Length: 476
Image 1 (cartoon, rainbow, N blue to C red):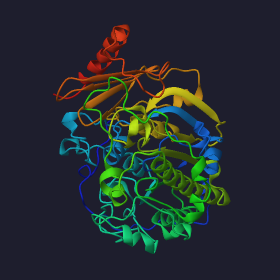
Image 2 (image 1 turned 120 degrees about the vertical axis):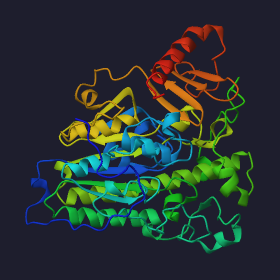
Image 3 (image 1 turned 135 degrees about the vertical axis):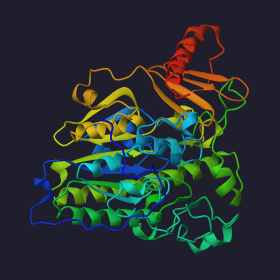
Image 4 (image 1 turned 90 degrees about the horizontal axis):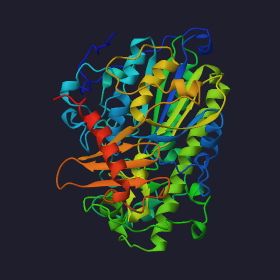
């Protein structure tokens, strides 16, 4: 049965507030499982549970130690807004759907598509959005039982004017302002909730306490901004690290034989680092990594507070918890910072799902973010809408030896990529012809593009055919 939205997809209409029905019964008596849905912006698998030896992430590591950790999860587009729109609809960002590089919503032709939280809402869930879940607060208002909540202005825009929403708290930052932005990092000696991710955490905890008294299952979405630029976090998280001991990328050069069209994000260089220049030296690389690490540890602490509250309220045994990063992030590898390409560090992202009663496991099957929507439906015993282009990964969570997919797909702009077990292939579908192939068995850091090597002709052709098979499914 194809389920349709009662309203047009992602129209900018505001919903009024709805009260949560309450009763003396505990939420744990509800038969449907709750869903705690945690999105973290620009988080790559730079977490202890993924093998990072430099990072301090005890709470995310603990969550992974009680759930399923997906070692090879890939976003479907390496930019915030479109990645979130894709995951929340289980639709691929193909050209005629206009999931272009900087859009946060589907084309008008996608009207009638039911979003993930809206689907849960249709089946009796009370749905809430705190922080950055969809890219804009106004996106898909019909998805939520209450108006989406953010810590700053009603227009939903990321703050552009210097300090308009307390993004920078250290008085010294004012001296570094440039282009109406502050510096690219800050370590103010403040409480967690002085920065807005701490306030997102506080709001989510308050909502959990409120929801625990209700007689409806809930779908509570919590979206954190950090470690997105600027790298601002309370000083105590910076103090976790000795900058002199932070290891930096060894491959601070473009891959051999990389196409001329290979680019990275300019966020750090153009928007923030212009305040201090953009030096290409070890000191700068350590400083930028230090800021990213501090922000990850800051968000890890917020996740820990939320998980502690979930346990204190007795909701652990009836709540599915999912944590995901919307895409990856280069930290100086290939002298790139940020995302906006189809290299591994841009498209691979963390995915952790804790299913009540399920033992911890680490799965290495390749999965993609369009799979998240049908998976959560499957885990909650809800029907999967027929529009979903993803495939539930519950079967491999049940049987880790099961197969899932031969390939997953990701993109940025006019570049489309195919990820198989051992290779990552990219093809430019507009502009001068170009392609990349990286052999992850021999070259996990993607230092040599072998797409034009005779040794890899068969693999290039195989991956091109996989991509062509996908392209045939696109609407004319």
